[in-house]
Image 1 (tube, rainbow, N blue to C red):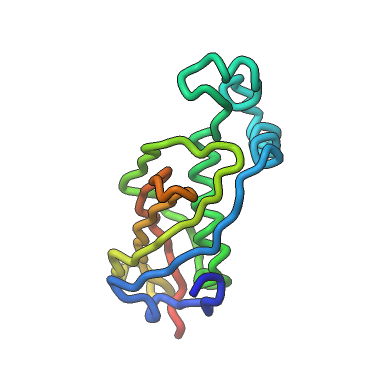
Image 2 (cartoon, one colour; image 1 turned 60 degrees about the vertical axis):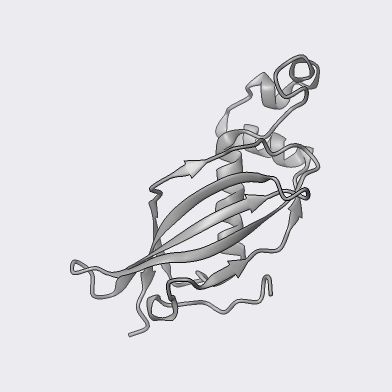
Length: 153
């Protein structure tokens, strides 16, 4: 059930636990806002006529924008609301296909590791494997995200 999760503390996460995000449609506004925020106005993403003559035949999302959309889905689910202390990075990230304007995307997540940290009594490590797909079930993003999550105590 998407978008109805309660905040989870470190103790609430279990390996094998899954989550599913709601979907959303990527718009031209998303492309423009990403370019404006980052300063990346690469024509492949921002010039319709240029992009039509390039490899994908149309504008496609920036790779970092695709990653940002994935992190937004994780947070939007609510299970890290007020319990996440830090995003610690990723062991891997792949973008096997582009996100195109008007794609409807969503994210499937699975907890693949929970680990107590001897250096932290207030939190633990939670690693979540993610797969983002579009409306045709084409995988457009994969990666594991490492989070430092508060303990309940």
